[in-house]
Length: 91
Image (cartoon, rainbow, N blue to C red; front, top):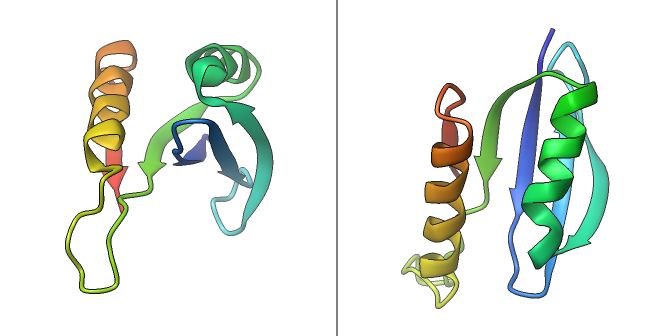
């Protein structure tokens, strides 16, 4: 069964997590430099099947978007371009 790949994007470091094959539990996978994110995903996808991506959508305490939103949207757009068959969910 394919896994769900989660991304907590930062301009310097990116936190990554992945579900187990049954998609019950998510566990931390790695932390990578933001410039290495897409290479890491490509390498990971060669050994494990990815069903979809979950990308953290940053909000302030008053529920408004924070300054990271344009960067996160850029990552979302690039994921959709590289993996058009896999949904990208903003959470």
